[in-house]
Length: 154
Image (cartoon, rainbow, N blue to C red):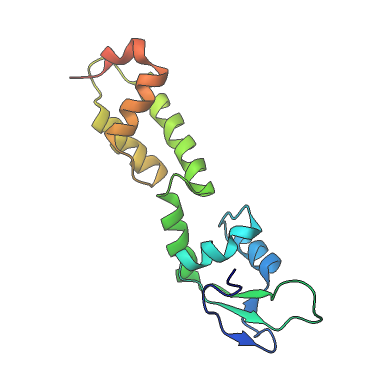
């Protein structure tokens, strides 16, 4: 098994602008980037273009530690925006729950024949600040309000 699949540089000491795995996860949580599993950290960093290096370990036991570059504010914003649009990320799942709640809230408050799936999706997008489409609106309403779906404008 390859111990360095990303061909990371091996340094003697940890550079000052790098954090170990626990420090990096704490840093990300403070910046509202949710990372649940430490074992997925290298894959997360690879997919988001975060620089990683390995440092020489002390002693002969264990794996070679990986350290991660501290993120700039622009990189943090870029990652958060990417995670918001991904329904498989922790942040994306939270936002998906909010979208579904808002869809139902808007639908329940709507007057008969005044709303469409598209208009509901646009309102959700404006309120939450992330994209929402009529397919999600249709899916949510089919699941939760199928008996009242004729309330929508055709």
